[in-house]
Length: 300
Image (cartoon, rainbow, N blue to C red; front, side):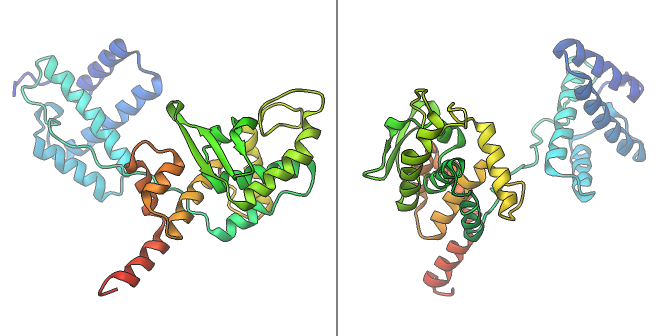
């Protein structure tokens, strides 16, 4: 490495000025970079090392120290990202000859596991809406989402011509305009029939709409409004208030797997293009997997 060393703080500020000019970063991002560099400089100072004299081994030692101190993988990955950009800048400016971050892998962040909802909790949620005009609509929406695993955007966009209550099927247009046919099940079909015959005409009034689910003003239901419904009914049912519309989609997939459905079938029902996206549910469908293991493994 070259010997033209500069004070570490000056190097950091020169780097921050450069990335601000090049990328127009926000003050918050610049402060995050500054804090990450300061943390690294503090660690280096205890070892009498300077920023431009760091080896790959020393960088790895720093990252390991972060882990030992309990820093989350996401925060460790951010610090490494800052240092990677910093050392690429130094390399470009001719202040170092080797980049210590080269070939250093970011910590695996993993996939966030879906929030598991018990079947008992789902039953409480589904039973929460009252037997009123709006309650019939809300119960139909909750039942449909849990029975079909629709995305919330797919649920609120449902059109009347996509429902077939005679066969108990719904045609869904998912991501990328891809269509799939999903069964509704007896309970959801029944609740939809009650809503369409009794509650929806009252909500529609003299207006015209092809949307299945309507607001009290006869307009198509929105994602935001349905989110508020979920929050209200989860509180009413005594369930965790952090429940979201997506939680019902997670419950749909998890409970299917717990009751013996195969992963590819769940993939098709959810409308996932890639099976790897569906595989996350194997982590939460523990009850079914444990039963399969104990029943079929020779040492189960």
